[in-house]
Image 1 (cartoon, rainbow over the protein chains, first blue to last red):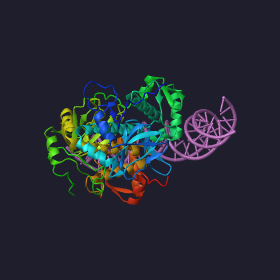
Image 2 (spheres, protein in one colour):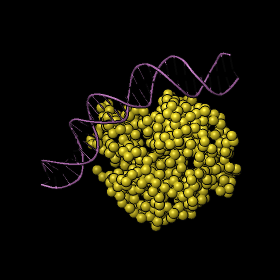
Image 3 (cartoon, rainbow over the protein chains, first blue to last red):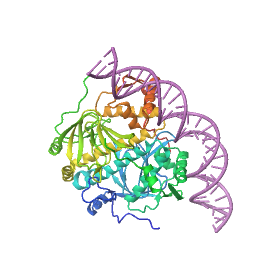
Image 4 (cartoon, protein in one colour):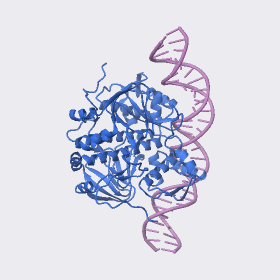
Amino acid sequence: VSKPVPSQRYGPSLRATDPWLRGKPSQGKQHQLLSEDEKARLATLASIVRFKKNERIYREGESAGMVFNIISGVVGIYKKRSKTDRHIVAFLSAEDIFGLAEEGQYVNSAFALNSVTAYCLPVPALRRLLSSDAGLDVHVIVKLCQELRQAQRQALIVVQKNATTRLAMFLSLQEHLQSSRNELTTEIYLPMDRTAIAEYIGLSLATVSRAFRALADTALISHRNRRHIKVVDRKAFEKLAKFSVEETSD
Amino acid sequence: VSKPVPSQRYGPSLRATDPWLRGKPSQGKQHQLLSEDEKARLATLASIVRFKKNERIYREGESAGMVFNIISGVVGIYKKRSKTDRHIVAFLSAEDIFGLAEEGQYVNSAFALNSVTAYCLPVPALRRLLSSDAGLDVHVIVKLCQELRQAQRQALIVVQKNATTRLAMFLSLQEHLQSSRNELTTEIYLPMDRTAIAEYIGLSLATVSRAFRALADTALISHRNRRHIKVVDRKAFEKLAKFSVEETSD
DNA sequence: CGCTGGCTTGATTCTATTCAATTTTCGTGG
DNA sequence: CCACGAAAATTGAATAGAATCAAGCCAGCG
């Protein structure tokens, strides 16, 4: 099984679905936002950095000098609540950006879930480039819209009261992301462990485990592996994992 | 008591704190992002619309032709989960923007929590303007960063397991927003009712009520009114409502 | 002054958490 | 290639806390 791989890339890269439907429907697929020229210009600012599994990339409160653009691997953005308790705010992967700041400091911490390679762009230079290039920033806007939406989706998951629903929504989200990246969706691949899932959807590890069991027991999903999930009963799964419901009349 | 009011405004307006600290620390205060010139240019595209309390502004799935920029009032962005159950994703007020879309359709619904006045900008014209004006879009980016952060903060609240903590964090968030708008913060003003709070922080109405009681009983807050809260025990309140904790060592 | 809708409160039920004991998986070195 | 150990995940039993449902209360308003 050969895993689909990002297209040829010669510099920083952003992919997103167009929020304002320019031409024909994009079927939820993402497309490259940056032209070769734009990539090239960004590339002059960028250096490449690598992080190994579980390595911290930056820490909340640190001076935010860099913005990152992922080439490969998965990054977790998190917030610490207490010594033992943290909440994962987002999982990001290839062609996502992270490292945004508030008042010059990172607002979250970031760590690598597995081996990560990324472009690393110094903020001042980036800022200069952005304000001098009209086309470029629209693309960045579009990308940010995407991530904004993502954050709202997480909140939607996490607000669910039923654990099994939460997990189903999470799985559905992963599947959706996979498909928008043009990867195979016969199976859902989970790049993170159960603990990370728990920290993301806001349940205890034990409950996540039980929720997986519940989904399997009711034959909505099957797993050949802890990280490879297959949706068996698509209909029931979708019903459970649905992010919203068509508003009827009023 | 005269309520602070947005500065003179002759057109669409965006306020935010600078995410990349250009000059001196801004103390969390927001500033106007748009120049008079930019406002003027946007104004040529904009028309003004009004909505009354509880009026729906748009519905999820509708074709997204307009972006809105609030002049006054409070708007709730929500997602319906079932006939009876909805989740409020965000509360937005003056100088916020909303109406962003995915593939040409609104992803959420929007309603007015009270009387709302807003600029209404047709997407195609806005889009044209954005891609031809280098400075303008940086500002929009900055504003979107802000809202992205906001969404993540909501997720942080909603993931909390303790009801009282959730409410305290919500109150703290409101207070913070108020102060960043340069309004008085001797009291926290809640522009929404308990039901809306419940729908935002993901608790039942009853639990929200009990959480208010718990905060009052332990003398962390007092309320002269259901919508006017005062923090009494600042220290304990902050401790409970803290959004994150300084990471110690590793 | 009474009505109405928003809010509070109580009693019960249900579900996730916690803590602990196993089991499974995976990476490492023999 | 197998065996071992450590880490991750599952499972069970007991507990705690929020949801639910229903009854009453209060504030604001005609």
